[in-house]
Length: 325
Image (cartoon, rainbow, N blue to C red; front, side, top):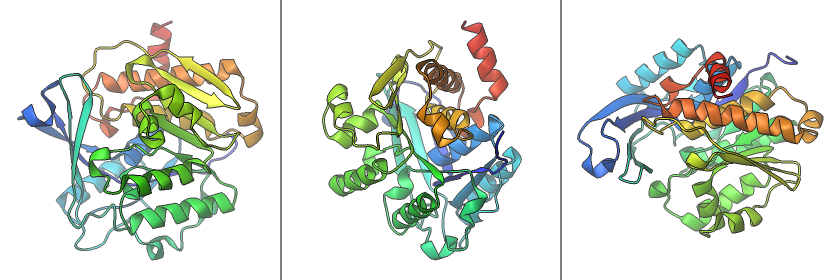
């Protein structure tokens, strides 16, 4: 290991209320179970379970839910030195369910929510040189002041040469201005080092229904690594004009919340300690191995109930791959 500096993940942390009745969707579900979640937090939890030193930057609500989330963070061993709390703010909640076709449905509720109230002044003293990589994304980019705060932090990390990763984790149901939001995402995507998108994210951003056409419309730096998840069909990576695909693993699905986040955690765990030169020269075989590892991580999470609490250890992922040949 070259560096003991932790990765800094940032964004929302919340409680998911996950349907216990698969294929009934949000409308038909009568039983939900509370689980800690939020895409950036799920990624932080996944990294920690993969033995990657991780810190988490977020604003957590000053309520009972927020207290419970802070305890959960501490229990995972994730640094909470960068947690901000403000009296009067609340913890956002999200309801999640699989519809009749097995596709995830989400509905978010936030009122005076902590995650979208992070201000630039609250992180001015953050020592950027303490971190090896900066990850951000998801619903904190939907409203001010948090959107401007996270984008400025991203620019600050870029300015000192710290590598950056981004996962928009789009939730269309809470987007108010689609064109403005697309423009912001495209701006970030054009500057980030490592990008992860779902196939649905990509066709939304490209504003077209054809995945191949959406890939052609991607505007990223030539040296950027772009990972695209394809649901049950596996995943692909784009790098210097190469497109490499790997099939996913067939498993008995319990629930899919957090699968994409676990995939991103696995990707970061494989890349965060490589130099820019090493990333530039990654072979096809190495990229295929990385996709296999990330696909396995996501497959394991799909067999479990929950998100942050469902993340596997490195040993579990390697054992899964060994058993699958």
